[in-house]
Image (cartoon, rainbow, N blue to C red; front, side, top):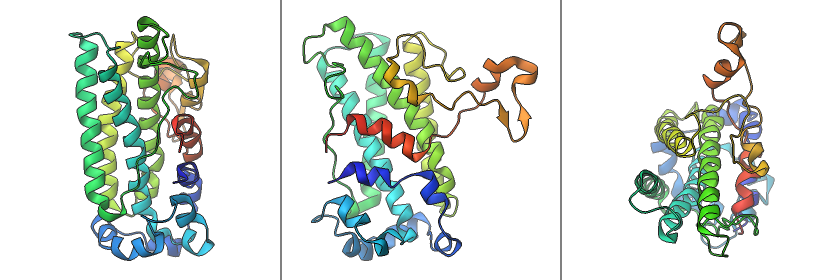
Length: 276
């Protein structure tokens, strides 16, 4: 499965620029699920690489009716990543036993598994394959201490990657919300998951000794420079024409609002950890 190409299609710009007649064809979650039987023939889900099946022809690409289904498939891919990351983190022995961190990781792991099960159940026969992940990002990290970086360093990297994944997830879900406005059931489900992901992000950030929210576009102490794309664009102080920094300062003005992450930016971040 060419997951990179698959993810690359899910940009806010692409979906937001759908023609009006295409938007009208976007269906509710229930309706979308009822369409999966016919969609499966067009997508050839089980037999053809995802990227080729969905995007090889302009005819298939133009069928924005598929968008609710595709949105679920994208969400499942991202949830796969988080689910496997937390399970491996707990299995690695890097997270100190009996600590608050271990309890937080155990709880988040349960949530991510529940998200995966929910999305798999919703997609049925149209479930996408789980990608192969590389949480070392080609050797740049060693969060599970598999290559002997040492427990302390591995633990620091493990926390840093968790923060990057969670902060990315929160902003990425928000970035796709506008694309689900005409599918209220799907939007409701996405927002329910989004709020939980936001709590995950807050907990992980506090484990690292940071505020539970992002300050301007700062990635926070100890975060690798490579994670800066997660935070670029967060320093916005103008909201609906109102300068939120006027009365409380720029820090508070930006802390009070999360900015959506575009599909392109989310793909660029996630692709670092997807092998195939």
